[in-house]
Length: 534
Image 1 (tube, rainbow, N blue to C red):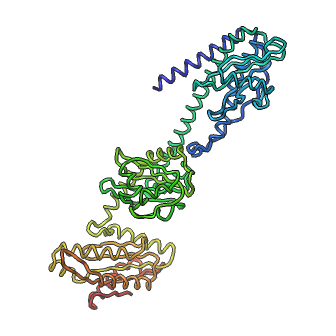
Image 2: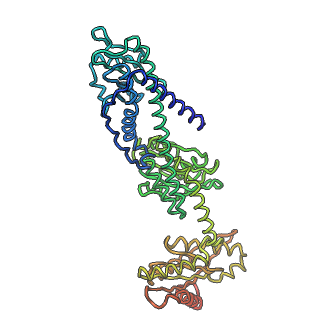
Image 3: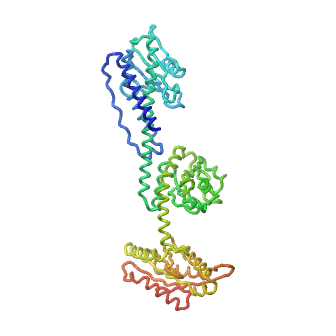
């Protein structure tokens, strides 16, 4: 395909050059008029290329370059036939009926077609282009203006070449009627070749912009950073007001929100994604969906969950990220106003989603593997390895930023009795329930870990001793009042806790764990189901 296109392009170029040389030999060369150099090409931002924001700048530049490219040939036509001026008229777009002067033999910008010549002459140019007829405007019996329609790459009658003479042409009328179609065909070929070159250049810019983004995404290996970077790029390349990244599990047909930009509605910033929702259905089907007016989304149900309220205004698109035929996630882009998103920008978002799949999936898999190696498989809490690393980190940060941190060591009371009485399955259920109560009762910055057996621990950064004691007492009461239902039996357990604190710059850094363990021993010795702090 590429080879065929190259041969066609070379053939057009050779034909254009041959025709030009042939016409140039008809008359002696004359010195060309002074030429105005074309303005420098504007520097275009790759993101503007993707969003189409450079379309006006590109159109203006292309128009100037087309005029410069065609001027030598038009000058050659003028010399051959003794014309004082040659102009090329062209319809700028299919939806614009009026013709404009795209190139001419004079210096500088082409004149305004709306004021060129007389109204009758402008009407003759339009008639010739529309009716595909060669036309002449005479004065004293001699042609003073000669017009021939020009067909461009589309094959539609969208232009005309116009020769004007101050007195009379050097070529007779019959000769002009014979030569004009040749010149028109040559101009059409040159203009088409120029348009093809520009389209290739545009595609090259588009590809370079996407490659730059893909390269940037490949350099980011931390899942959280990559997720937020992808959302930011999605906003930039589509012109959306917000973006949301979803992670999807094709096996369970469930997902969750992985990241969102600041402008995303609260509904879309966090939480699970269900199969029956709008976003879930797009992931299951593996097809992109776009709503210029988000009010129609209400007819489809919840946006992320079957029963959520969705959004009532704006525009929205869901773009699945596919690995083969299965979705591993989706990009959601939207705006608070209807009609903001366009088809071009939705395409950019789809290309971005496809480019990001490999990097994102690799980052997610590495993060999952790392998390599994640091997670206790029974309770889902962090394991002892991760706890030890985080203890060192939190102590170092306390010294660096000041303040206090705290450690709470917890031990389920009479846990061996639970296993002996109800069985190990019941013991596992009790341990899982107690772990969940601890995990759900602390902040996201706190570390909740299983040290081994029935021993659990809480690391509390930037927490004063009184605050740690208050939290431990609240969690103790929550576990004591909780009932575990397992295999038709009801089990209650209590927990003993030891609390120790470290203040930046104090001497107790190396003994924090030992001190908390000693307080736990005191709680056990004092009757269990209690909290003992320093």
